Length: 451
Ligand SMILES: *Cc1c(COP(=O)(O)O)cnc(C)c1O
Image 1 (cartoon, rainbow, N blue to C red):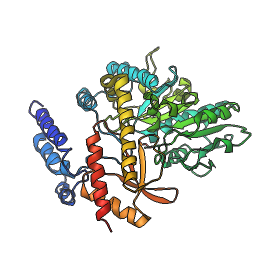
Image 2 (image 1 turned 135 degrees about the horizontal axis):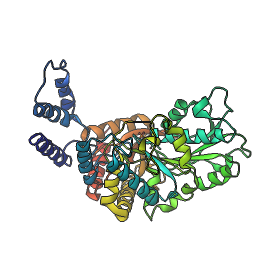
Image 3 (image 1 turned 90 degrees about the vertical axis):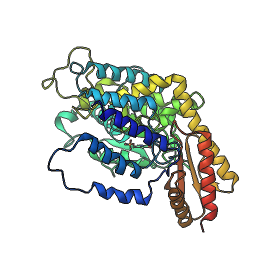
Image 4 (image 1 turned 120 degrees about the vertical axis):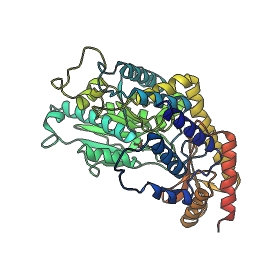
């Protein structure tokens, strides 16, 4: 350990130091070198230092520089310094964080992180939550709590008796629902296709005035805070007013948009979010913690526990202590909340607000400069998302591929309301205005040089 861990530190620092100057996408030559991993399983032990050497020498160059300052794909950030260091320390702890009694340190740290999260995201302080792998599983957990509650209200115990023979649940979503939420609905037995889809406006916002007048029987409405293409928010306040008059459950997928509540200048976008019944977000997107970490929050703690806890007969809970496993699909799990705690502890309230605001300022700079250069921006840039086209679909795709190959920055391709576009998501703590300008110059250079 005494030579191996310093060796890992040296290699990691060399990797991180190189991020600012290397190609964001790995070179084709580096990817071709991955064949060095294609060996038979070693028959006998190999020195750990040799294992690490191969990982670094062959693996590192073939990574995408997602941890660097000019990766603008998929709305994902890099790991804040405090969170990477905390991740290493927690790895050394190697705690199986399912029970408070067995792992008090991680159970307490996660409980505190949860309290801080509810505070910065302006959610009800009495809500509960779960640290899971990502927003996909966070949506799954929150919707399981929703399923429990709406069926319990009509006298059906879904955990005990399943869905066969249960009263039907109406699920209402916006037409712009994220595909991962649709997948969660399939896993939960609520069906990927049997949802009622409400049309959206030109920014992808659910049109609340088109919600069904009368909602009867068990009903779940799924809203979105932060459309993955435009960054737009559904009118959650209006949706909640409508839903709660009839007893429907409102869930909000806020994988990145929920973080707007943490920045005073953006908080207006989050109006009404706290009125919902459950929420899902990611920490590995805008909070900039290492993969993987998503967060589910549920207003009624009993609902999440009813959906997730193993029965008392299996592992007795002890008094008031919070057992993480009572809130998550997993029993054995790593303590993802440690990096969340480290992020919030090191940033503080103002540091987090600054991170979110800074990224949005950079997004506006992208939009203004691209627009000034004669390119068309397809969305209202209200958050950290910018959609830009380079002409028709075929040319836009060619320019995006050329930008990715050029290597200064990386942004992905998307289709927004029938038009092919490049989606720039500014989500990293490491991005500076100089990185934005370097990226803009590269984008415009490639645009000019592409037929
Ligand atoms: C990214 C995203 C998801 C899925 O999150 P994962 O962390 O990849 O599971 C769900 N909804 C929205 C709006 C997203 O942006």
